[in-house]
Amino acid sequence: MADAHAADTLKLLHIEDSPLDHDLALAHLRRAGHRLQALRVDSEADFRRALVAQEWDVVLSDFNLPGFTGLRAQEILKDSGLMVPFILVSGEIGEDTAVSAMRNGATDYLLKNNLARLAPAVEHAIEAGQERRARQQADRELAASRQRLSELAQHLQTSVEMERAAIAREIHDDVGGSLTAVKYDLAWIGRHVGSPEVQQRVASALETVDLAIEASQRIMHNLRPAILEQGLVAALQWMASRFEKRNGVPCTFRTSHETMQLPVGVPLVAYRFAQEALTNISKHAAASKVSIDLSLTRGVLSLEVEDNGRGLSSADLAKARSFGLRGLTERAGTVGGWVDVSSGAAGTMLMLSVPVNGGLGGMRSDTPRFDDDADHDPSTWGAP
Image (cartoon, rainbow, N blue to C red; front, side, top):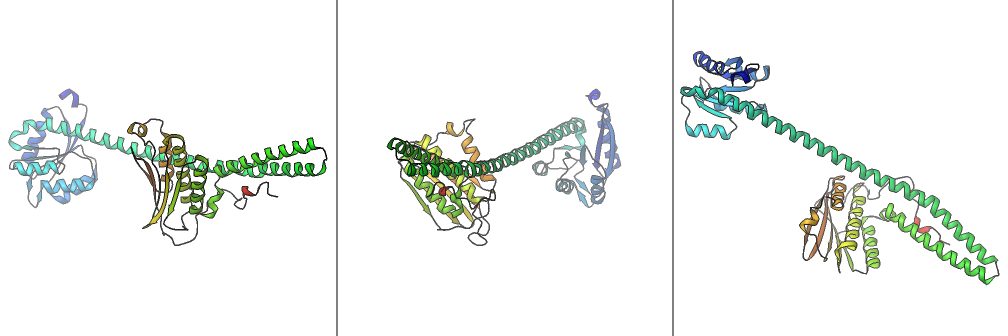
């Protein structure tokens, strides 16, 4: 043990009013092979000054000093936030006091008539302190890593929405405009030819163009939900109706307010949440009934999507590649919200909760703005 510590200098802060006891403690530590840089203090003021003057490896403290106590010194050290091991060394400490000190953060306690245990106690305290600091540093690094990962996920969500908006704008401006022009040209050809065969071909081509326009509108709505410009309530009503029509499954929509004034970003997050939930229901739930509930109570927006399908097992929720729920959680985090999942034999309920400052008051802001083409309405493509 002496060889292990010979090259290190132990920085010791000793709270002790007896120079003799101080020298005795140092003698035991030197005998164990420690090189020492020690400072003895015997008052609260000196102790406070010493704590900020330099870093210490360990604090030894007598229990009773004139106008000062070891327990008070322990409180001061704890309040300072310094991760320095604290050992009580006294000739008159009782068991109850020692237990109380240990519960309050003391690393160890010794009796002055048994200083043979001092060196091992100091070494153990320093090792324990190093491990504790290492754990705290690891926890800080892990928290910072999680924060960076969350920020990256939020950035990706925002980037995806911006890219969707850009693609939707191109579909609107290029594909939609071109299809509409082709439709008008075909209609003109149909009016100016007399051949029944050509007119039949024109009619068939017009039908194909109409299907292409409808598909473009559907893609446009999925990429950039223009329906949100009418408000979140209208958008969810439209989504529920569309889900019921496409899947043949009754989908009920209920809301506490006919209109809602929400902060920028919240309506889009809620819309995407419901969209993803309904997509998962149509693919996996085998449900015969779906409900969507939207409410705004006490400054919290709540959106629940519930089905009576097969439910999610704990294995489903724990899948390493279960990115759907993770994506919903990350998206909710972009607006300070969170996602709760409840699933069983009776079905599954997904709930999005978002604190909304201002409730129903303030400026209307439930219209997402991804670009400067908010006045473009894809539903007008191909209109006569």
